[in-house]
Image (cartoon, rainbow, N blue to C red; front, side):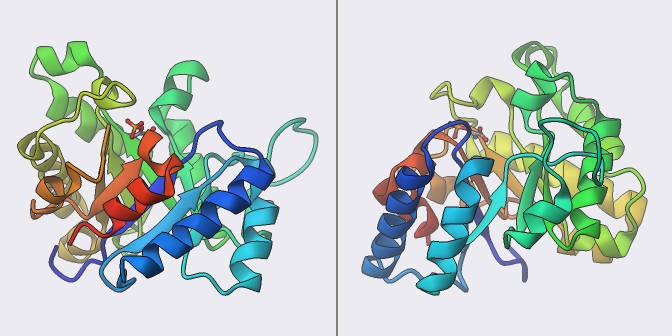
Length: 258
Ligand code: PEP
């Protein structure tokens, strides 16, 4: 929509080892070429597990593939005694363009708060990467009709401390938890309602530049068969795709939504 390049990001979650990762990225590149995908019409990003990133980097650089990649999480710390953590500097050095922060699975299973998500997003941006900041309500909140207010509070907390200029370059992903991995896709109208509310919230707090620049994605059971209707909505600038991003043909079809 309106001057913003659509973004299709495939979140592989904890799937595929580094050898399988190379096979999938190669296949995806073939599929995109075969479908005559125009990368100006949708930026294509894969988000593999940390252990796959070095192999993906070697492949993408070596074959000059028009695919970007990112990480599923990042440490809030810069370096030091944080066993098991991965820093933003390490990810930037591997050529990551994006970092997903605040995915609902991390909010749920690792108790990540908006405050932590915001701090992680800051680390990513400082290292030169673009955070993909995830928000989204659970089923009870949706049933209570409180989904818009809930998501806006998450946006407010998760984007704390960013300037208008910074937010203009960020990505926010609206992922209703009840639609993730359930096959239950939100209607295009559901997606538009919350994506538009997020943009208007950014407009009222940070102004037009931030609101018109920030890319707002929808995520939740996106497939090649349902992406066109979702992308037809003015305030949806792309998709964060889980399950369907593990199949080259399917994810390629999502990227080729236009
Ligand atoms: C996700 O995990 O970001 C996601 C949207 O998953 P799925 O597409 O499988 O619902």
